[in-house]
Amino acid sequence: MTTSASPTAALNAAGPAPGRPVAAIDTGRVADLIAQLLVELGEDPTREGLIGTPDRVAAWWSAFLSPAGAATATCFTETLVSDQLVIVGGMSVWSLCEHHMLPMNLQVTAAYVADGEVVGLSKFGRIAQHFAGRLQVQERFTRQVADYLTGVIGREDVAVAVQGVHLCMSMRGVRMEAAHTTTVHTGGRFGSDPVLSQQFLTLAASP
Ligand SMILES: [Zn+2]
Image (cartoon, rainbow, N blue to C red; front, side, top):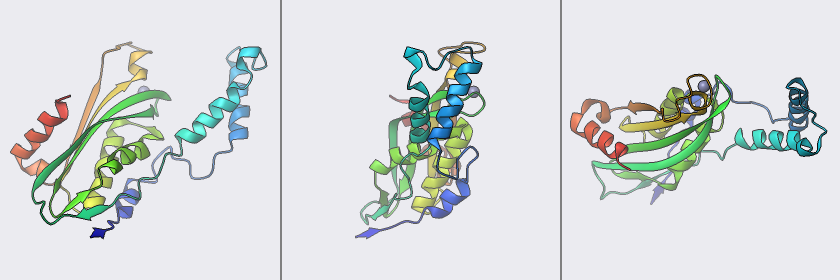
């Protein structure tokens, strides 16, 4: 038996996110602006190597800002499962730091306590991708993934840990290539049960 959860409320609570375009992207206009940017940066957009670059960049922006929707995540009734910790790790998504418009790689681990229902495992990656495909900050991304999962399972027993490598730290400013940032959100029992919380943190840190 399958039941559809309705995470719409969580999605709405998480958005409309800053930096999320509301209208369709005019890729022709974006390409024109990229060509203008190249000129302002001292380049010649008509030279051989740059022909087609504005179009490619515009196509990339359009694809990046329109990731597959996460609103199809469902819960499956599973009466034999109760009080079970479920952790999905190793999810790697790319996002863009909204302060510098430089890439950040986010390694995501998400967990929930299954109690009478399970979430389709393949949805976790799509949820992460959905919230990564926009101008972001890692802290907000972590919270949005957690809020969305909370909406899917209908309970607060959700934890999300994210380890980010930010190119704005690696290739500009202090240039700390090995620096990484960890953010953790714990809700419901992950916040109130120290054993559960420790289990999550230990498993999230293991490769
Ligand atoms: Zn940045």
